[in-house]
Image (cartoon, rainbow, N blue to C red; front, side, top):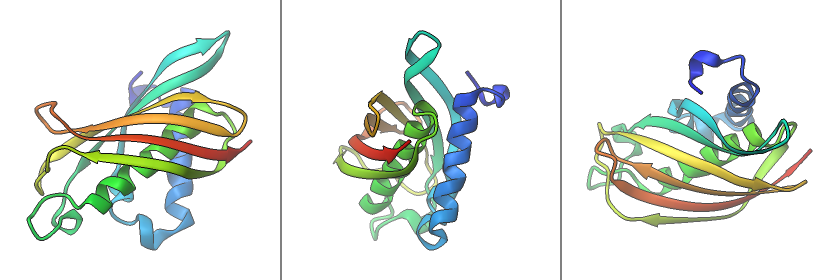
Length: 158
């Protein structure tokens, strides 16, 4: 599913929740979250006509403001991107989810990414219950090498 099919409910929910995040706290979400670009939302399993898990893929170009003193993406920026992407992926799967809050987010830093690089962020919403989402994700460089890994749990209201 590409963004050409914007009428798809998963893509609509993902875009809508991205706007919710941006509106919630402009100071914290203008950069880097405002530069997070949704590339696709792909269902990975379903039950009947309901999607039960999906992978959301984003792209992000690292700017100097996102970097530490060594010129590579700052760990806090990586954490913020995984956090926001996870919430967006959850909103795509859990129709009607609101007030999505991370309850646990673990990020492993494997390799640095320099400013100017464009990375892909893939977050899979593995499962949602009535109030909890379970996610895992990766951030890969332009060559497809995994640079960061995340595991995240979120809670939400329906």
